[in-house]
Each structure stands twice: as structure tokens, then as C-alpha cells.
Length: 345
Image (cartoon, rainbow, N blue to C red; front, side, top):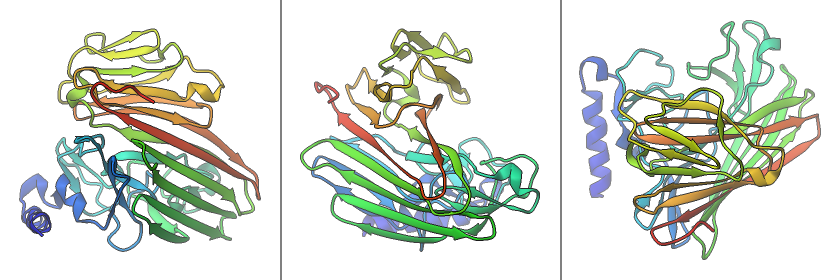
């Protein structure tokens, strides 16, 4: 009750804020949205359903499966990485640094599919954003960072148990010819500090679905990424130069040498991986505290982007998807969490 009262107070205070902060809420108000807590006794997480009082309404990330505050032994791996967020999902106004619009105001392992059929749609036409639905094309160039007009999100369901949550979305859009059935399950594995996120996407429409999906792993493991070490099964190479005073590539390891200053971004496409499934296997650790996680998938890497700012680090591996009508694809991410004195499983 005390926590709920505090959130209500924060919400009320935000609505009365002045100047550039008007129309924004503190990051802590995210917890005022409907969610369930899942736990296997070792790790806990908050999972946010779609529908009434939905947390994420942006036009970028998959609406299903927002997983927040994944915590192991007191370490929150996916805490807030922004100060405030814009309350209205249609508000594209300019705000000061530290304020996120609806496109990006969430944390944890957030997934994004590439848009399908944008060029073919023409101005005012309909294109597909898997995980969200059918969107109206309003501009000449696609941008996931602006408000989108959602025309058809299909039918969604949600159910949960004490240690898992399942989302489904069934979309049929005869006007565009696109349709799909999508299922996603977040599961905390019994007896292990492990979380899996499994997916199944079936093309039920009349057009091909050719896209990619990546997981924007918003990690709040190490403040300003100081002491962060990222290890892969291959030798890293950065397409764009990274700041040598901040980041060092050392064979299969990426090391952060100093904290990222506020207002600075480290970002680059990364290469070195091959077409083997075993290359999608990364360990990210705070070498000072000993906390970390291993991230794996059962699909090969199609692309990798690395992005970080002072409050968060994100490794973003992509998976390729190409489905003709009637075809389906399944994929699973596995997250193993470890703490001081432990090793990645």
C-alpha cells in the first residue's frame, strides 16, 4: 500500500510540473501500469501485459512481453535508464535530455521487428510492423522514433503463472494482405537463475513476411558501463570507430576502460561472427561486482549493433525472418544470471 501511494503521489506531482517537464512522468511511474510479478525463487521479474492500462504503446518495440526489473541476488539487471517519460504516446515534442518518448520508454529485453511493406504501401497506405500491427504510412521515410497511427493490432491474449507469462497476437488484415499468428512466452526456469523467452511466428496472410528481429538488451548492470566486459565466441570488430579512451576491443572481449560521460554515446555495428548458431552466445559482466548474464539464442546472428549511454548498455543481436504464406518460425533467447564468485552457466 505504501508503494502504491508513493506512485500515485509521483503521478500527481508530474501532472502538475511546469515548463519543459509538463506532460511527462517520472520513470518510477512506469510501475503504475498493470503488471504481474513472476519468480522461480531465485530470480524475479515484472511482466507487463497488453490491453487495459498498457505500459508500452509506442510504434517501435513489440508490445508483447515487456520484461522489467529482472533481479537476481539484489542486482536489478533492467532498471530505469531515463529520468522521465512522455505520458502521451502521440506527443513528439522536444524535451530535455533524460526524457524518453513513447517509442523508447521501457527497459529490459525489448524486441523490435523491422517494418514490412513500407515502400510498397505508398503515402497513406498500410504496412506491417510485427509485434505491433498494421500502421498507416504517413511519410516518405520510415522512422520508429515518431508516433505511428495504428490501424489494426488484431486480437491479443495474456495469461500468467507464478513463474511464466504468455502473450499471443492474431492479426488478419485483408486490406493489406498481411496476417500472422504470434506467440511469446517468458519463463523463469525452476531451480536455475535462468530466464527463457520463446517465440513462434506464423504467416497466415497472403503476402511474404521478410523482416529481422533484434533484442534491445537495456542492461543497468554497471553504472556508466564502467568495468563492463563483453565476451563473444568470435573476435570482435567495430564497423564505426569507438572512443579509445572509453572502449577497447581485445580479441573476443570488449572492455570499457572508463565510465561513459553524460551526453556521450558509444555505438557501432559489430562484425566477426559467422553463420553458426553457436556465435549467438555472449557474456556481459561487471568485473568489479561480479554480476553478469549470459545471452544465447538458437538462431544464427544476422547483424549486431552495440549501443550505450551513461545509464545503460545494450548489445543488440539480430535474427533474420523470411516467411511465405503458411510458413512459421520459432526462436528462443536464454538468459543465465550469475553473481559474485559464480560463473556463467
